[in-house]
Length: 398
Image 1 (cartoon, rainbow, N blue to C red):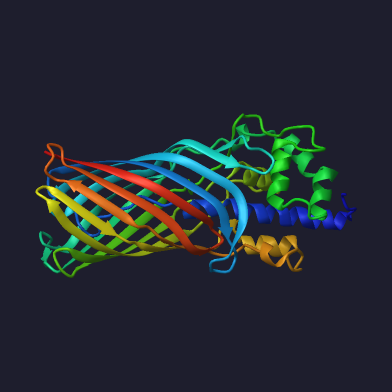
Image 2: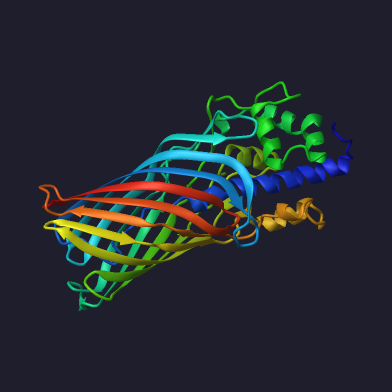
């Protein structure tokens, strides 16, 4: 039974609804695993071209709550199959140029929204281009046999943007989001903010009109779709011929504000007179990865590693203000409706990624297979994203 509500409550709830959904749909972009460089600070020998194909299956079913830890809350199921590629070339014995699009093209995706199961993700992830420069190593300017150090400046750039305006009818959406059925269900706690937006897009119950005009429609984009400058740092300490450990750090600074991460975020922001002003600022990744390598026979090498990674990004800004300010303005300084509903703040995930490598050096076309499973351990305001990936790497000499 729907509960009556005052005009003040509806106004406040609508503002809170926007804030809640904008935060929720921004979570996935941080948690999608990026291209895994299992070589640490190593670089390719001069004249060697390495091609990599990376099929990957990724899925997420929950979100970490607003305090960093192990606790999660339910979320819409998301799954996709993606194929990425990378090209790397040894310019000389201590510089490797690289173009990496992994994750790359999403061949299949499914977003199981509460009110519409016929939704998908934007197909294209961002691309990275740069060069790894080894400063310390066996063939580097500073020659050492017990350690390696390298840095890799680069540029991250989007390959197209979702056409949010082509995914829905703004007038129908506004009518649906203001429908007494939706507002009453929100007031009574019968549906969540995410479900209310889904109902307003897809049509449900007392709503007779579907806002979406595409079938299936693109629900969200899992990448940032922002132009950014990046820097990667690699340090390897070599214990023995078989054992070494890599310390890795990566930072990205986004030069321009990004577009809305989802059709729902775009629709709600448009109602508020705000569009394409989502600023992620920067993000950082820190990782430690112990390695073991051994020869199984002539020309056949086995490797194993266990990377532990921490991702962090500051609180997102919308139209120049942090989302926490949008929350405060929407609630007129009052507390959120439920204690666990306040999800503004920075994003972070702690994950582990057991990895196996098999390198057939003796083949006519040397080929390496890298199998990896990435699992979340803890986090804050981020999706619990799992991924299975297989890198197929071929080495050609020029």
